[in-house]
Image (cartoon, rainbow, N blue to C red; front, side):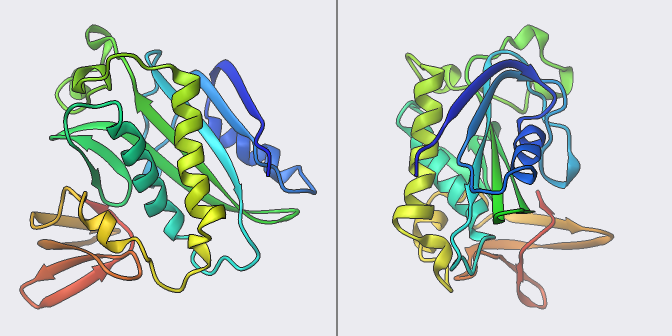
Length: 243
């Protein structure tokens, strides 16, 4: 596998562009597309992802192995790979907010959007990553000034954006291709994930459609679902927004 890295100044969404490239390809592609800024960045559940200059925004293509039984684990693995990579730069402890946002304290440092598609060559995923490297706080929307942070604010000294992108991609590649984590029936990295899960032991609220579930987050189970202890017992959830 040889990855091709591409960089542009501005785009609506690197995920959208990568999906179009995969839909048009008869053979597996392992491209990585990075942009200086996005005009239409998206997060989970269709939420807008603010993507100004001062961050890194990229999407990596993941043609999935024929034996991939649990592609949903890719979302959790992305969180682990990114968190561990960013921690090398940060002085503050970084944690994962289920399923894959990276946080420093109460503030968001990185967002991830994983999308599965059926390309002509087979099943593939696009992993979109947005990391706040050095943001101009004065230009941030008011609602974000107290909820986001960047790498320099958490202790990074020097960040070379192309190097950081490659480090993140290589870390996730190791899980997917070298360790063949998506071919497992169970999520073998549960303990490593739970060790850096910020919601563990916290009271949370999960919203999915019109349903609201409240309780204490116990961690993820062997299938990657967040287990919430409610008044009526433990409930594993695999979707929705958890706050």
